[in-house]
Amino acid sequence: MLMIIHEADPDEATRRTFEEGLESFNTSKAGPENAEDFWIIARDDEGKVHGGVKGWSSFSWLFVDWLWVSSEGRKGGTGSRLLKEAEEIGRLRGCVGVYLETFTFQAPDFYRKQGYIEFGRLEGMPPGYDCIWLKKALIQT
Image 1 (tube, rainbow, N blue to C red):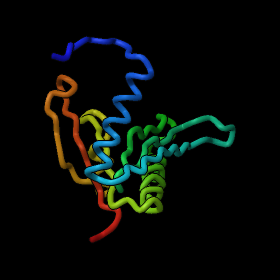
Image 2: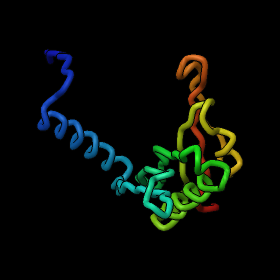
Image 3: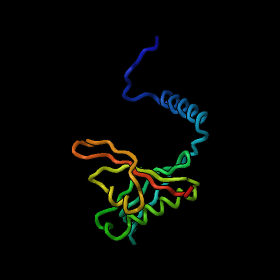
């Protein structure tokens, strides 16, 4: 019988075993992941950061992990430009679509205006709000 042990911070070899095992299984079912990160940064003339997008592509989809615009950069189209740049990265990488998550207190209406549609919602996450998953096709089929 296997022992089940709680470990707050497993060693690197244990983490690598998890990663390699999951990657091997996933590849056997879905093919290579071809994961690749990206960062897009919005800076002013002095180089100060006013926004950006962080994400990755894998399994022919682009995921927008973070999109942030400073209060000074909002309402000027910076968020739309950043999102369009991320979508272009997805197209160049051959992604069929892009997806993301946002909270109801963040920017779901912004994403809807950019052509994203809701495909999932977790109510009460965080308490008093909802977590929403949205997607957009990049390649028309």
